[in-house]
Amino acid sequence: MKKILFPIFALLITFSALAQTDDKDTYTKIGDDAPKFSFELDKGKTVNIADYKGKLILINLFATWCPPCNTELPLVQKEIWDKHKDNKNFTFFVFGREEGWDKLIPYKAKKGFTFPILPDLKRDVFNKFAKQSIPRNILIDERGKIIYQSIGYEEKEFQSLVKLINDKLNSTTTK
Image (cartoon, rainbow, N blue to C red):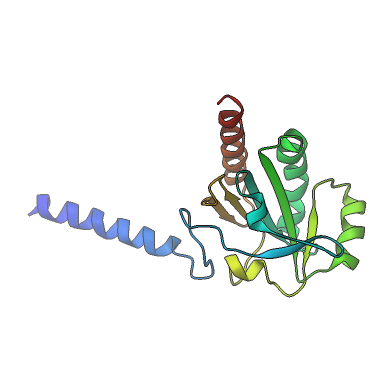
């Protein structure tokens, strides 16, 4: 009897853990094609995310008022952007949820960030990925597939993102 109950118990625990990690507020999952969308790269200059296919793309969804976002972005600057900004195989976009150029330009200058911080005033980009919760990081590979997603800021998870980016970019430069 014990031999039968243990596998059933283990299976129930596994299903319970999977149910707890099912996030109904996230519309995309790892392995999905990245959603298609356009965005304003500079005032008056619109581009499409498909224009960047062939590159490793990191998307960060944030808000200027968000404490975890303000913890994470200086680390992104130091550990990701400063290291890879000149790599032709990498691109990075930060989208300010419900924020326009009027907030983002002074915010970027005040914080000293050098990566692109772009408006998502009507949540057009954010709504492609999720219903709520920031910060979010989405990593899209060269084929346009989502290979990483995170919600919130947690140091250990952030370090796994840094490692994944480093590994992917190191493998593309050694090919």
